[in-house]
Length: 599
Image (cartoon, rainbow, N blue to C red; front, top):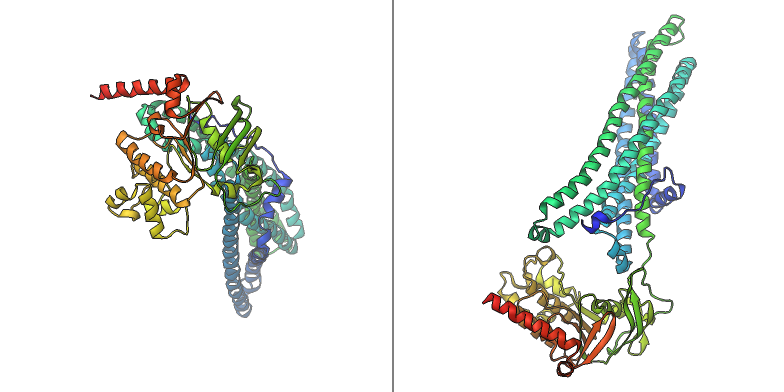
């Protein structure tokens, strides 16, 4: 089962959280002029809607029934002019509300993306990409819809009900009172069903996040899935989740199907009451034919706004659940932050010291235990050891992706927490075991190390990294598209580009995290030449998988169970016949066996 599928999302079930709603409404504060404009437009539209019905009553009672052509023409001209005015107000509120929604969504996504850039690695270690993507996309869109169309629709609904009742009272107060008795029943049924529908949609929403995460994991890991013939188990796991989502969607559809007929039935009773009581009133001249027609129209006017209010209420609760998820992301604090008074350091020599450093991931066991390590400026060291020994953790701490749980790390004698993260990381270049390229050209990916670099600087970096030769052999050279994640290039080619990117950034401290572990021997030789060229004159730390690549290191550090167990040159460690000797000879025998099998 993938991490996205095992990730447990926090439950958000608040029915009407005032604090969250206040934060949601706070999103429209910078755009209050657009809000006022759209509300004025919708107020004009709603008022004219109700008045048009009353105007039709006047046309029937004052123009058609008495055959008064002059009065009829006068009322029709008024109707036409007001229709033009309403067309303007409808255009105004749709345009302003749409623009407001886009501005709110833009602001929200911008804030979310900026906040994600600040979060520490620990957050991404425990949070699936699919969950984050769902927050940034669908949840932000839902909130934007609430603060725009939700606000507009609720305003329209309230004004429509209010103005309709006012005109109904003006026409016949007793008949209006009869309608008022029916409204609470309709409202109660509407809100009850909307609440049930909301509960099922909330379940669907939660399952949708898990399914999005499963999609993301399955697509990004498709090669592993196919290589391990995991298609059928993967489908079974996915089917379990989609079947749960289907059942919740089915229940929501059932409530929705029951809801509308009941509302229509209640509305039909209201229409029947208007016709029956109105017919009696006509006999006593308490109401006119036009008045009855207006009442029937106002019944429809009132029925739909009540349903709209219930829909907005349900959408508000669904949006509150979305907002709680978004705000939980925005309220997540980075675990690694700049300390007060941290300074920008324009230049470093590259002298690195780990002094009594210990570290553990979360509540897990200690990965590093009282580590002491000094890397002199310009020195080239290699770190080796069994898997899980703490090699990559040393790199993560040096880059300050995480912070030690004990001890201190110094750069040029200064506690590195006295430096801003931006300043520290700008002096460190890192080439990962699995290189990552961004969609775009080779040129753009190398330039990522220095965005203001010239074409000459980019080519020079590629030559130093021994990448220029293969780049010029590509159909479009430096403008060749690398594909998503660099999938159009080989692993070795991606690694050479990532080394060129590191060369271009010209770091004082260079880290190679098992940069040759995933390539063939021929490509390894080319990458090794690029590594040797880029490591000259700078502090270099190499985490090695293939021990044959680190024979020329100034020092080799052997790590086991978070402690340094050996240190020395290749020859010194071989002669001692301890941990390094065992690692080297075991790997040497394995490589010989592989070659024999290949032969």
